[in-house]
Length: 452
Image (cartoon, rainbow, N blue to C red; front, side, top):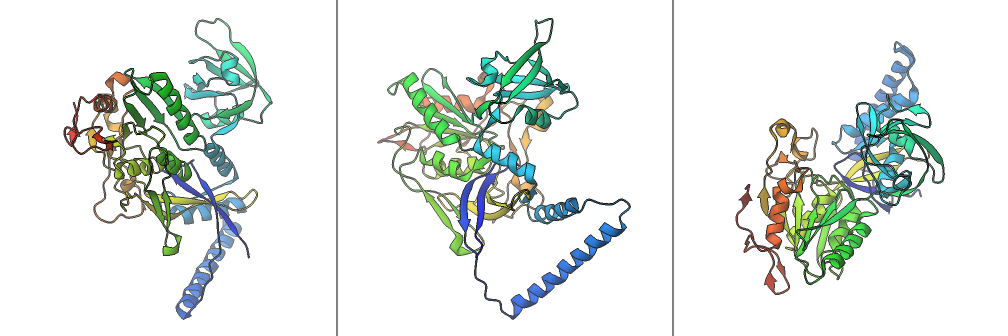
């Protein structure tokens, strides 16, 4: 018998992916109705074959057979729901790189500006930082090839490559009269999915941008570092910022949730057949030693980030602040199709929070809603329509909700949700329904909606 190896995907974005598992083939007892359905299916397949042959023989230009087949597969999958799709070999490799969170490269965060590559920042302790690459440097050439005319993805792909291989960069730097030539040796780069800082001298602020294979370890590292830096006695609590986090690995969402919980269910996934239901539960051991936790979410918080938010909210372990989340409550399985053939991304289950709620096309409602002040020129672009607005989305039971603010001010002093979180941890606001820490109430809520 053939065994099928698959990966479980949880993300609203195109690129993230997940936990390996092996599924066993199902035995099928075919009755008369099933045989009739099968016969009808074969007739449809014959129709597809007839159309395929007619296109091959009569189209105005000779088509590429492989592209015809790929397009047919892609059309079949995208017709199911917004998150099922076909990935060609390159897209599958890119997804695996994103999932691992590490690759051979230079260690530069970049963006595209006026057709050129601009350095956002070098990553600490990487070839780029060691070579003195600076924020706002403009990269004009890669190995003597001009980057103008390349897309950002094409330029990034050229900078990535096998570890210990060399690449030459030509850089224009403000204040320098002449371009700078730098030769870098690629190294193993880990994507930082977790960033942290001290907020208000006594609060640990941790930002989780995605859920890849590095996320839980990054969280543990930052919790330990900030606890030591601030001091366990002085530390008021943790702010976990998952705003505009599109999701990622199911396994990482589970282990991140587990880091704050002592017991209980984290998430359940339910497929078409009852026997496929799976439940994930927490293990003893709270990484924060029971300190208060505030979770920030918004309209861009989707899938894996919604699992974490839902688990901590249902267990009353955290207070959620911000705006309603995206509402992607489905699980995708990545099914490799063999060497060089790419993979299928197929929706195979819905997930449910510990209380048994599906957030599909609804999202998670924060305990305290905080709306940001949005600049006039951005007001038409700062709301996320959510899962319910996607064509062909899986329907939800009951009323669906769509549209939620996803703007995060670039300057922390203008961030109302962050200020609310800090006020809660400092006891400025009072919420009688908040989670408890030890024997006393940790945080309290002044009102159901705040926009101050």
